[in-house]
Length: 291
Image (cartoon, rainbow, N blue to C red; front, side):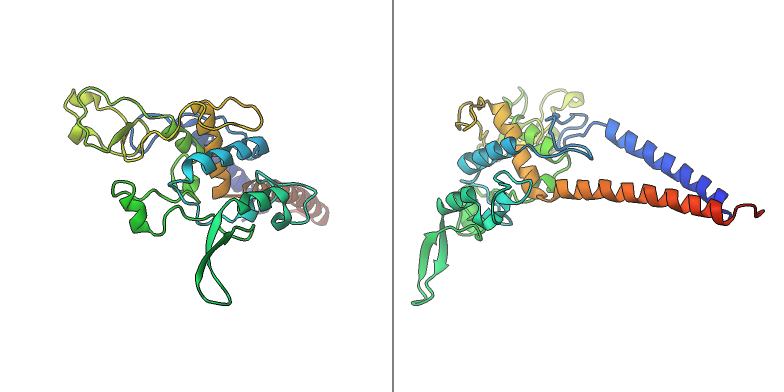
């Protein structure tokens, strides 16, 4: 195969990939539990190949998680020091290291961490340090399920990656609580949410062609207007809190996301320049040679 033929094939492949990517971007994300029910678009700053997290939003999102979500939902894979890594909610360019960040040291100290006394071997509770993981709200999964009607609250460490739609799914779910439509049979402890995964047709007594989207969720609506007080003066509406905590969970699910994007752009620039040098070298070496 000649170089000309190879380059033509490569161009066709790139065109097909670009077309597929454009189709994927133009198709609205659908909630797992609602056919044709598009997820709400949070307009997050970190969307797209050049997007980045907004530190102020991450700080607000952490506050919502800490004061609202952390009482039930764990983040077992998160360490306090991660909050101060580059791109994180409490990163400070003047810090010696994430573990020495003054905000993280103060935040971690608010928690009591179970440990073992190195001298007596007895269980103790001590102040948290930046090296500690986020403490679990329950001693074990059985206790978590018992305290929540038999359904243990899921860990949120990688929730944005575990759900189709990522941050938009979390944002939609938190703002998707509605009064159940007339004709929908519900049991005690169930809540109706437009974006929760599920099939409501077995519980729907209305028109079979108009089954409501969404599903049942055990967690009651966790957000109320003014539930937290933002340090930056932002009004804590339900929509704002849902958007902020969704952004924070998205960051926690992939703290290196922005660095990967920046690396990817650098690699693409390098490959583009390398391809140009390779092509020019080819033209110079085979100049005047028929092939």
